[in-house]
Image 1 (spheres, rainbow, N blue to C red):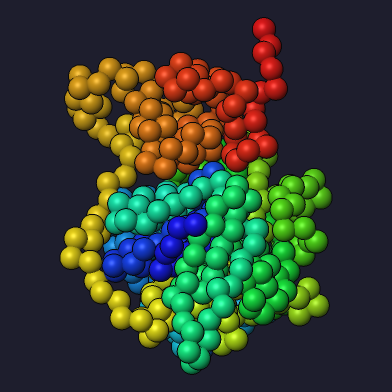
Image 2 (tube, rainbow, N blue to C red):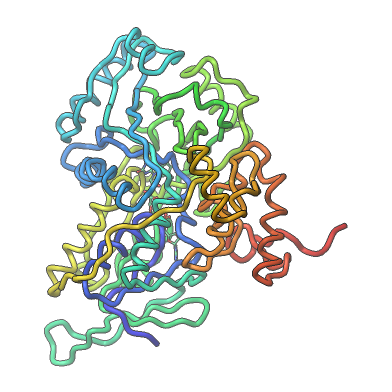
Length: 494
Ligand SMILES: Cc1cc2nc3c(=O)[nH]c(=O)nc-3n(C[C@H](O)[C@H](O)[C@H](O)COP(=O)(O)OP(=O)(O)OC[C@H]3O[C@@H](n4cnc5c(N)ncnc54)[C@H](O)[C@@H]3O)c2cc1C
């Protein structure tokens, strides 16, 4: 058994932000994650929008932390070299009811402290986002888009550099208590012993539950309240990069009360694709990530109303994310985040119901967690905390001169492995050599952006497999798409 000040369960955006925030202090911290890499949960399955904060009820944690998160996001992305683009965002009205809803949401946003919100007429809308349908809209200049995979990876890598230990493929299956009495005679600093399916045991004083969809179960396992999480699936289409010029900013419909999300929207990604979605459908399983024909047809129809120029030929893929909702289906809408140390279970810090805008709010959430711990024990700042991180080289984004220079230095920059996204062999190798040793195809995909183009890896996947086989001595049958159980090959074919 190893001993720690803090065990964090979950390496999504929230767990990684908490890890990085706490790595500023002299604490012994370990992150336990059941998947093989960061961003394996909801944090890798969302709209990737840095929300401004007008969607959430004034006075709620969601509103406060989202506005705070939005204000610091750009600087954080610069510090950790994460792709980020301040695009602004347009909410579109199709009738007078929608226009009234936009008036209301704008007033709500102003109360929340959002800056620069304004109503726009159809002419200005045409200038902001040409070809978008509707009679008017609301413009939010502070909304942005970012890369959610590299966001989690960057936070995790920076936390690692600052001394945090990460154990991937480590599913927490039991949490036992050390017998202590807070005000009694006996006292131990190790309140919890966290056990994983792989046989690990980790004693800790603070247990931080960032387990997303499983956070209710983890709380119960640790002796805290049994929160009920209602999974609510959102399905998406991914459009090819050729659609890039069609959409300069996220375009959302005017909000409708009671639905589980923000309505089907169109969002440009930092890589130049467009995503359409999400739907909002309460489901019974926390891991049912299917995309379904009826929902996909509905998505396309709704997106086409927003953007009449949309064509099916642009579609290259689909995915789904699942919201960990505290609001049951009969209630709909949003309940506020729960972020607290449980009074009946000292040391257990629960983060429950962290649905949208959880990524935008993740750093302020992490600061709240640090505040809770800081009230319980003195936190000593590290003198050698490294705030900056350098992200991977993006060959395709460089000038011809810079590209030529790189090829002169390393001939692997001269060999394109992913033709759709122009990813070079050296970039793939850099991704394979990541500090966590994550060698799944998804780990390489999210770091180098290979396999994400129109051919969906048809050209580059086998070449990446060859690199893993030849250079790292792994057998093809051992190569997984994500975690164990997603092996790509069951045997040899000619
Ligand atoms: C459809 C959709 C759209 C969204 N759009 C946006 C948006 O545009 N902007 C925004 O800011 N937010 C958005 N969100 C919300 C955002 O994605 C989440 O709030 C955020 O990702 C939550 O992060 P997390 O770390 O709490 O959860 P997760 O990323 O799910 O991380 C939890 C981690 O815990 C791990 N785990 C679970 N159980 C165990 C266990 N027993 N042992 C070890 N590890 C375990 C999981 O594998 C997972 O990696 C959206 C969410 C959805 C579903």
